[in-house]
Image (cartoon, rainbow, N blue to C red):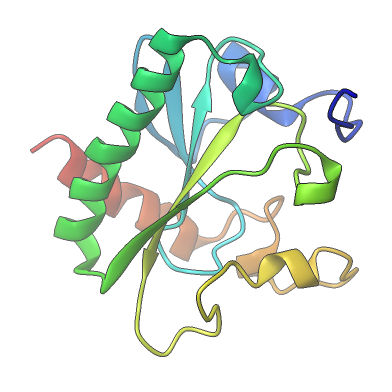
Length: 160
C-alpha cells in the first residue's frame, strides 16, 4: 500500500528550488540539495535540507541523494554548533500524512536543541499543526528580522 502524501499545490519546496520563491531563507546550495532556515522557528536555527529533485519521501531518494542529504546535514550541524553552541542537534524526517508530513517533497529537519525547550524529546509542532493563529516565529509564511538574522548567522559559520 503506498504512503498517502499531503496535497499541496504548488509545492513550496519546488518553488524554492526553481527560484520562483523568495530565497531569503537560503543557507546553502549544493549540487543535489538546498538548505534553508525553517520558517517555523520552534528552536532558533531550525533548518531543512531539501533535495533538489522532486522526491516526495525518503523511499523515493536514490543512494547518491541519501548521501548528499546527510553530508549537508553534517555541514549544517557544524555551522549550528559554531553559531549557537546548542546542547544537542536533532534530525527528523516525516514520510506520509500519518507521520506528520505537510509538504509532499522530501526534507530533513535539522534542529539545534537547548535545555529548557518545550520540545521534550520530540518536535512539539506535530501537536500544534492544526492551530489557526500562530505567532510570527512559528508561521513559515512570515519573514521576520529575527529569522533573517538567524539565517545570516548560520551562513556566516557555514563558510568557515
